[in-house]
Length: 88
Image (cartoon, rainbow, N blue to C red; front, side, top):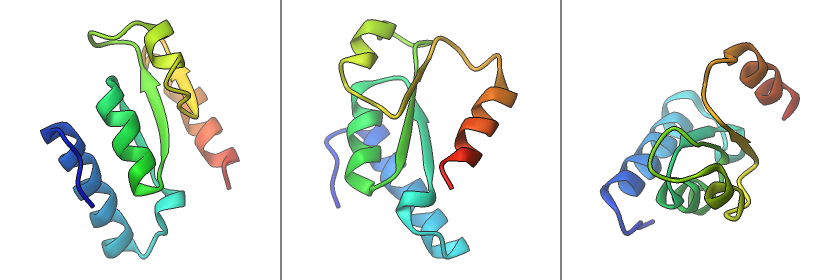
């Protein structure tokens, strides 16, 4: 699987490593990123994706990419963990 950016390549590598090392299917993995590349590569890997508007992209720009969840920041980690656990 190939992605156009170095960030994307790291996303695929991280997802592949998790699926191999822990025996998890990609659909049980969660990628958190702040660019369109992160969202696209998480989708290409078959992982869930949370977009966080802490980088150069606005919340509106990230929402248009239709990630599974969009956050303004990662301050409420408890919410993120509850949300991820609800995925199954």
